[in-house]
Length: 238
Ligand code: ATP
Image (cartoon, rainbow, N blue to C red; front, side, top):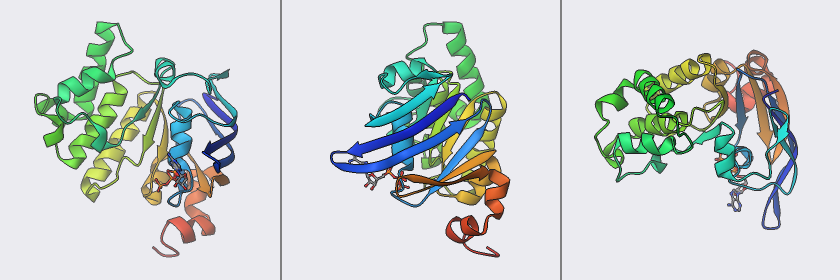
């Protein structure tokens, strides 16, 4: 396992929102996390990347506990969460936003290589490298957010609703690119409201309800599971 989350509990103040999550990811997988609004999906990602502290439980990365490390140290360990598209730095250019993503890397060659790769994945960003990020379209900002995360050369990439607010054609493009990123060797955890497209892309999936994992299986089995079809895929025949 590259990531092993064991009995993770999180409280916001006195309110418990994660009630003992167990979730494991193998190297090279895309694992999706499905669930209704408020189920605790974003909290799970934010806890893995060190933005939220667990009240108990363990997060092992390559077998070593990381749940007490700072968010900065976790990026250094090669776990990176792509921010939401709207959280790029609007008054900086595309290039400057990407440069910021490489803040942990002192190896200029490595940074140049990442930049070249990101511009191949997202040619639109290459064309617009001098444009202020705040003037990009929603889809372009989402590409930039993913590109910025890739600049830290992650081994595990956390994506929280990368298709949010995108037109279907752009969403498909983002998902195709996520597959390419994964095929290049990056392990991915994907939180996504669009369950059908997420399950088609992922190898395995987890379903969360009210702060608990209620189901886990291969993505193909979940796509055919009647409860999943009913709750997350728009019912039979949809
Ligand atoms: P969505 O699909 O709507 O983004 P989610 O599954 O990602 O939902 P979370 O954002 O993790 O769910 O929220 C889980 C619960 O924790 C919700 O009830 C939410 O209101 C609560 N919550 C999230 N962040 C905080 C916070 N900073 N302080 C207090 N409660 C919070």
